Length: 152
Image 1 (tube, rainbow, N blue to C red):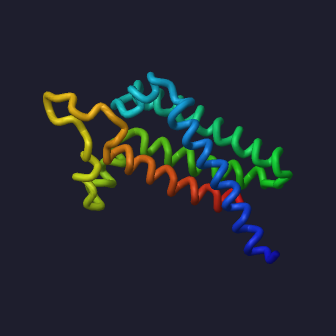
Image 2 (image 1 turned 135 degrees about the vertical axis):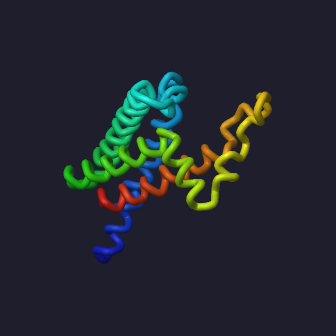
């Protein structure tokens, strides 16, 4: 097998581990307090978001350890640190809400961002099915791929 195929296989394995960690860290590990407060303005929101990103990143570390221990794969610790830093910083940016909303507005996706948001004065869509959530997840998964390439 050529070096290119081996590198691609490592990227795939690392991405799979990070994606699994993302799903667990973003939905199970995150506390309700973090979810409710991470987008608030000021220090209260920043601290809640930072707490979420720390636990989210720790979940990524665990997933990569499981990958390494389960497969014997060798990963460079500096590249792992760089990849996890990319994931953590970009996750924080998106989860503060305003940067992602502004990006959606700048790219012509403002209406999609608001898709599924309850109408003023109503509670008519209490679900995860919002445009903001879809854009949030797309942003995170895109950066997880970048992190996987950096790590591999």
